[in-house]
Image (cartoon, rainbow, N blue to C red; front, side, top):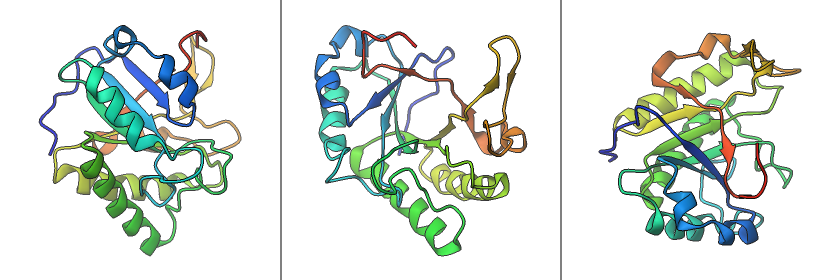
Length: 196
């Protein structure tokens, strides 16, 4: 159960757990400059990877948690534009798969002692209705442990006029703000020398 508060001014860092060389270069000072850290990625079914690109996720989480500032909110990301097999293909359409994925995600954050889930659904073939149904079920389960739910939709438009419409995909307008979802714009910290 998370007893952490969402920061008034969230400074969010994203750690790509497949980039072990870059992860090893992250300094304590860099980590401590963030008060929210997102670890990518869980398997598509919500379980913790133990093989493939993200096999070091649990090890990376443990390493980073040792050097972060007290009170840092830690999240597990699921989805993404991952090219390895079906890792980024979260099944949020089939009712059985949805329930199993939600159950696995809740178990994964308990195992890793994290504070919530970050949805990074980039599959443009998934309808906004399915995303909303999945987020509602996940929100209901996460509320039981006071866990956070964030979402990082792909923003279109310009910096001056951003739109919540995934390029060539569904509009996120219907899920903007419902069910306690916090929308984030992320900065990747697994490659400290590359500005985003």
